[in-house]
Image (cartoon, rainbow, N blue to C red; front, side):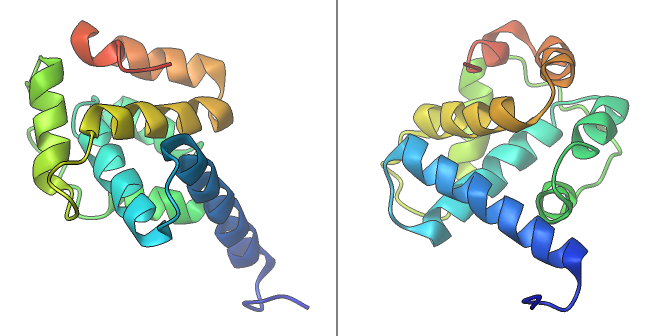
Length: 141
């Protein structure tokens, strides 16, 4: 029996839960709520630094629920943001992360990128990396 009544919804929910579990493993966290917010803020920081076309290409490979999180609140005007440094990228994540201010945002970004690397095609990951400034690109596994 389907949990939601629609196989598509069940599938995206299951896949999203797998991705969150992998992120929790990467970060050695047990709090799913905290992991969700970490995933969300890193996805938004990444999205806002990609050209609009590359944002759409990456989104096409995300599970439907993750794609919704990725596009939540997005305004494509003025994108990509012109921030070039690793520090600016990480500061954006830190500012948006609603939990502990002592969080290791670099570790959080690396963990989210690691999860994406496992599930998005290598060609698309390469395209995403090439669209990012070199200092941000170095955060990828």
